[in-house]
Image (tube, rainbow over all chains, first blue to last red; front, side):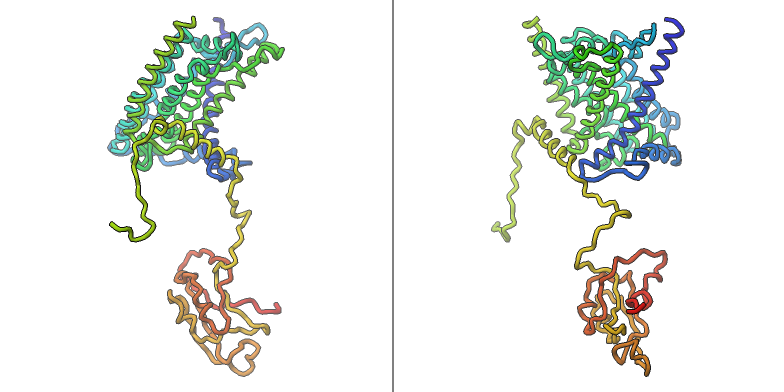
Length: 347
Length: 165
């Protein structure tokens, strides 16, 4: 690995980092706009044309707010909470294959920061780390509402990680690999050997379980109990102000982006799109179109997250636990068994 | 118990059936409903640029009317103040002098006529009570002020502009 490769990797990392921040930034705008459309309103339209500068106005406001650390809070952990939250949100993008290989002159640029052979495990690990930021922040605030929110976040994430892991196991039985690059490559094109190549058509139930768990893991409605205003004021970020609050909110949007990317890669063919090799384009063009295809899928998932948020009310906490433990886990185990039987008979 | 009205409604709490318990069918129905609204035209009125029209029977700021010759109609009878449930109207009557016939229609007129807009509830009883058709609540809504005393509107704000000016 020469110096040029390292520089290319660094540039790629910076670009991915910037893109995930930009997407998260504009997700806040999209959320407000989409919420408005769902409610027959216009939404923010004063800052810039159609309000497209709104996220910057919001961000600037966040920075200018007073920074408050409660007197009885543990200052170090209080700051560590949001930092950890945004850190774990950002590192998830490292293993996602954003596209095929791009050839620039003699260099072959792999549009994936690192292709580790346990990519799926890495994602699961990062997802489970994500709850620490919430927990530490909520606990360090020394506030009962924050603590309750943190406890809810922790138990909710643990419960839904189980069925998420189980649904991925069924997927891994189909793919036979943990590397996200290989999983994406296996879903090449759209149709081959008389069946769709995308994993969604092999694991529809698994995808359903996965997306429900993704909602729970990203703390989005209908599973946004850790931060429900009606019961817990602000939940784990009740005591937070200024950019520390901003980081919490921001990490939620980055998480949405990353989970959209993971769902697209695992179940919807990643950067593959139908007829990708019947267009007669050069490899580089197909790669670029593939990146666009991946982002289209991700944006659809982000839109879906928002669509659901402005449709369904919040679950009650016992309903949440019932759904997680009594429905999703048995369902995902049944999914594994069915997948096993089908694989045994058709391969 | 015998129903006291026909509005009584028997509420049954049935346990959820299978389709309701798996949530998904109803969730998709809900998603379809919100999607329908997504493409609907927004009902927002972008206020400062775009103003909504008042309804025809809107009761806003009061105005003291003039007759066809431009004379004040009010004769300071005090019926409006009497009818006012919020006691927002006060007035001091005066006698019309010689040579003021072009200003006041009746022999008696209101030298001071004040409405406290903070007390007024815009019920419109004053315009109903007025025998001279002198007061109408046909203005726009009352603008905001910084001081309470500025809400006490005198004749300078209430009386209609003279005819030929």
